[in-house]
Image 1 (tube, chains in turn yellow, purple):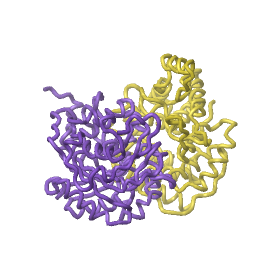
Image 2: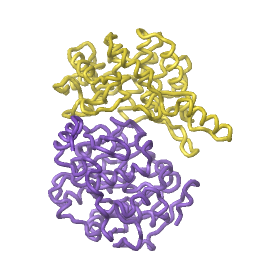
Image 3: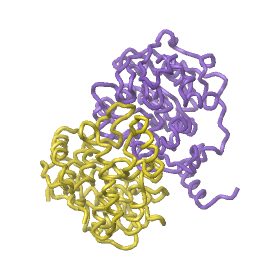
Image 4: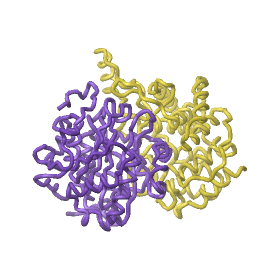
Length: 291
Length: 325
């Protein structure tokens, strides 16, 4: 195991909170997102078991997960918990309720009324901001779908399909992937999920382009986008984007160059993602294919 | 009044924050604005000049109560860091933030931190690097808090929401200094010191691009944020603003001013007049007028430069041409 990975895993081990989770930064309270990624990076260790125990205590009665102990909000990080449950082989009731919540959560742009509005707009020669017959996932219920929660939910459902079969799951994956392509930016990548504002094209970002490739993994039509991701990896100065791009390329079968040596950041989410993205890291745990 | 367990927990969390005044955003009647407000317009031709002296002059000219609002207090500097594009000027310039840091530290603040929660899920530190914040602001990493990923506490009642979570760094601050950029905005008309507070809403809870605020309504959210975070002072970076398709894809527009004051609607109304916009036509300023501050020109004591001497019309996209004064 290379020094790059070792020092990141050591940093994660030394910054785990007493409750078993991780904050976004050392000394902060535990949050679901860094906790799940750290648990994936440390999969197989006791630290990861403690993280899972904490995470399961945050599941709410409707099946969703709250993003932190004291934040009573249904949150799209539920998808990350379903993914971790699959990785750990924890296919019991919390997993099933989490999957059910994901399957029942749609973007506010979707539904019969929205589709009728979209059809009426087209009738008058107007172009709706997005195809309202498609849906991904919102950050929280009753809001519009956005790229990042959609990508995490696609990974979760593809992994869950090994245990949780059904037409609805396949349909949600189909709709989610189709929406990702519907909101792709003109430059070929993705931003947060709005390719146009006021009729003007908006640019994509390397972070969200990488996430889209993670969500879309398993498709046969990603070649040009993967090439683009490889170029972005060489040009982006963002460590976060580099980590996600490395993960995206590797789960899609590519072998990016190893990251340059360097100390881990105090940003623990970034540290966990860099550990996952390392050549010997656990990025393979994010591989997901429909069964 | 009987408190539910949830209320008790909310209050307990709030108490731990040191008694933030507006934990129930509607528990106190809105403090009506004073009859008049002072706003300072300070000429600054470039970012390489002595911004510290100019800021000190502006703070003095607008009569800001430094003794009670700054000395011994926790001050949060809230710049506008959104995206980075080397061809335009999206963000509050690093020199303005560095100068504000020095000014508020020298005015006796017990603590000065810089905090921002960008509206898009990007690498905040990489954005700060590209915007030269790390180069130009001493010890930037130690002084900066990513408000999108700070620990949070709930406030009860925000617009039509039962509760809303905010970063503890913002809730703990005795004073928030809105270091905004003078820009046009494709959804709001103009983004100035009040709109800048969108960055106080944590992405870790509400996601990016903070859709919750759009659901509530952009003007309503701007007013609510300014009402909740009333202990504020504004310094708007109009040295080089942005016109046209702001807040990201517009073009640089030098206005060569810093605009300052503790009445945020008055500061923003003054900025609009400098930009050649009618503040009465900006929905959030119309809503805030006489509720959070004053916006009528006759009720603003203009200090420093006169508006007529610095007015420079900002280009507007088609949807907002009706804002032209």
